[in-house]
Length: 194
Image (cartoon, rainbow, N blue to C red):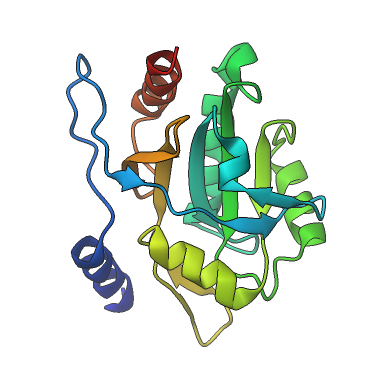
């Protein structure tokens, strides 16, 4: 294993805004601060802005379509949680997956990626855009991405939960976080806003 993934993890942890999910189940999730806004292009070539999703709980993840290890695991895990959200998905809870490889991940590529995972596009957007803008959005969320010699992308894997008021509440590191806890946190943030 190269030192690069370890270095990425250390840099991410030191540069923030990542905060571990450590709230007891009977308490409100912490508030980290305002979630960084963005406007990017969806798999359907339409603009999607975080501020347009106000009033909904938003899970923001960073992936890339040609990834062969952790991104597919994360996307599959999110699809499994989506299946347990029932009617709240799309109306009160939405997912946003932002590519860390905008040079290759066109809307067409992301639409196929979404199809491959059976993503419900009524409540799940796969976003790309100008590489400089996409990389700045990632940086603001604490994601560091670097192209490798073979064209892949090494990146930190953070999934962020944004509450209906646009506040960043918690970030999960990696792809193997507890899915029931993730579902419970999404529902908790939805219920908190009622």
